Image 1 (spheres, rainbow, N blue to C red):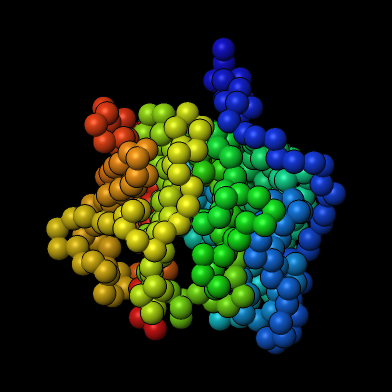
Image 2: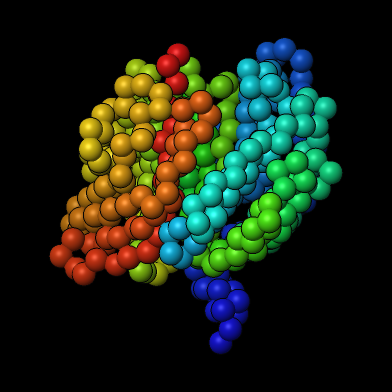
Length: 369
């Protein structure tokens, strides 16, 4: 059986039926309403397409983005693309953020800013979405059942072009509630999150400058949105995803300015979900390690000493699971307020033989405000 047919079979095996047919809907973003007048912001999964615009009209403070990434099976290369609607504080309008790490470790990272007049088209079909930003600089087409996304990149200013294919090996979920129409999408009132592909087979074929970046590996797709910029409310967060053998894991630890801490994990084995929730206690624990690592981080740019992360998930009678992410590549961005690592990912159920694979992880903040 070919690789692509095998991946398609995996998607059909792991993805549940996502419900009855849903009416297509089109959005032209950012559809800005002047000032800070309140705008409708959806904070539950609802009955519409899962991968839709959750803020149909934006004001000066709202934000929303669609995030896609892929990491090579050797943990040495990666691509990240984010299509954003940004608030006034960040230059209100639409943007595409791109980061590519080549096999030899060279990093290409930039944003293409389209300003407040820049348009971003999103259309839904079933539960999937398609998007176009700029003059087709970045586009994606998602299947109605979320089983596959095709990304096309043509960013002349960044000299990046090519395609990324993501074939799902996971069912959708949110941070805290069991997934369904009434599930809350907000972890904090200022931060919403929904995950469409916690794990996927990724096929990447890009040209970056005079280099070709082509690999197969692990993929991922989610989205975030909120009513106000989050930096004034966020102390820091850790987030990541990885695959180790039969295990797929998405983890997070978000610490607000008042030190309220919420940790989350979505853990699956062979596509069967073992844990999908958020907690205020240490039954889900995420912690960086390395020489002279400060916990919690006490300043922007406090990431250069981090060698990796340990993630522990206690499911009570169902067992204890431990995973470790070891960094191969570190990238620092956003004036030191944001760092991303790609690398090796190992672990599994305590008492059983550990499995291995690759993953991606990030630290956001502290922002110093």
